[in-house]
Amino acid sequence: MGISDLIAHFIQAELEEADGVLELQRSDLAQRFNCVPSQINYVMSTRFSPEHGYIVESRRGGGGYIRITRVRMDRQTLLMHVINSVGEELDLPSARAILTNLADSGAISTEIARCLLAVMGERALQTVPAAYRAALRADMIKQALIQMV
Image 1 (tube, one colour):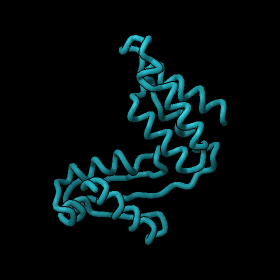
Image 2 (tube, rainbow, N blue to C red; image 1 turned 120 degrees about the horizontal axis):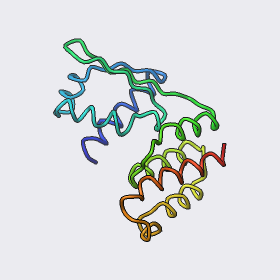
Image 3 (cartoon, helix red, strand yellow; image 1 turned 135 degrees about the horizontal axis):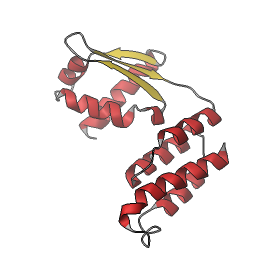
Image 4 (cartoon, rainbow, N blue to C red; image 1 turned 180 degrees about the vertical axis):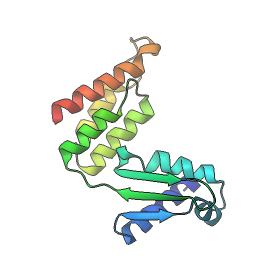
């Protein structure tokens, strides 16, 4: 298990204990895990994003903190949030993360997530010029999720 996984598991356990709202000092967390503060930033941006069901507020500086709030949304709100947050382009790892999180939360079935990932994969899009794949992938996931709302 890598350092990012350890940090994420620690934060998730603390969130459970704190009933879904947690304030942390970035420097204290970095010291606890013997890593640089940018590693904490990486974990925050990749594991605790809105797509993962969290709101992260951050204040930098000497007394800076990170406040993480787990958001409980109904299925329709979650899908609409994801649709609105995708943007104009979507790379394959981000598509995989979004679909995995949606399946883990129960918003879509695992089978649907696997099918969508298959049709958005590099092999399925191999006839599309590489420069257009990310934009096509973003459009595909948005349209698929709109049909599920």
